[in-house]
Image (cartoon, rainbow, N blue to C red):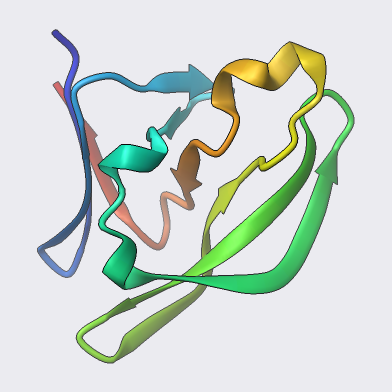
Amino acid sequence: MPHATAKVNGTLIADADSYEVVEGNIYFPPSSIKSEYFKKTDTSTHCPWKGDASYYTIDVEGKELKDAAWYYPSPLDKAKNIKDYVAFYKNKVDISKE
């Protein structure tokens, strides 16, 4: 069974036994996210086929990683499988999968 984790400075912020991979990014289910590390931001971007993305700043032990994670709260039809799933910038968060 596939397994994926996301860590910041060794602190586990997401842990999933199932996930989606879209355009090379692992999208973690909302239930796998350790919400105490996530803070919604006002940042938004648009993808022509996925829709409008919203962002989280990640705060681990006082270190903030601004807009280090994103998700699609209302994805377009082709991306319904990643509704509210969270992906991370690989240069900000350590992601591994087995």
